[in-house]
Image (cartoon, rainbow, N blue to C red; front, side):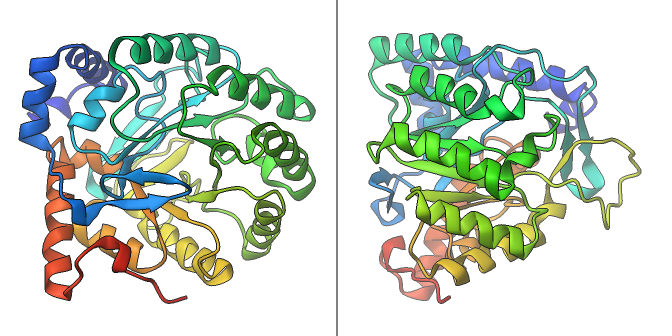
Length: 351
């Protein structure tokens, strides 16, 4: 089906797929069939991080399921955790279409979605219905929080707090997104003074009761990353997610001139470089979730052996399809057997 799908409008196909996944998530027999076809469970793949247990280290990155419509289906497809959002305090339509572009020669995407979502209140209501009907999701659920477009930067802490308080009962962990390139001015929240104000407000609300993570951009300098790390440790955040999409365009083969965040294989080298730097600086003090250009079991192994505790995929799922998770888990188990490792807990990266 992939050639036919790739002839369609990218966002239109994404919406249709999400409708299908949401429909399947409400039907037990269909969901069980999906689980048998697409997922692979093995205790050797289990991972513990920031007080949570994950059936495997591979999660769905934020941006795919912005409104939490298919949480149960993602678990059936084999994901070890699901991160929904980004969710903003206010509902917003996002940027004008077209805003999502495929780069098939590069196995990449460019998006400038602009945090299109139904808002924290609507997403909280959906998660409440899901929990009342089916119980809590079978894998850890992360909720990625963004700033409402109309909110001035100086009011950002209150905006994030509004979303966090509404969604608090439903997330197993929360991720602060200050690194999307598609909301004007958002990346300015990574500057030391603004970030300190934001982290102080959110950490004060959380008070260590649930994990709070920060998602950073790949386009930061090492000096900027050092400033962020100092604040992350000062306010005792639970971990880092690295990285978001990039505004860089070097080395692309697909002829395209569109603004927005680039994801997929062209991000792989920079994402790995940032991971290695973070791991060297942190010396294992905080878990790192590595995102960017992960398509194969070899990619997952490379991230885990270079300091990542968990990984997330997005663009790889678009290009590799729904059997991706089974392929990644099987490949990890084969590599573990070759290396003589009985569980991922034994895999320790060297700073």
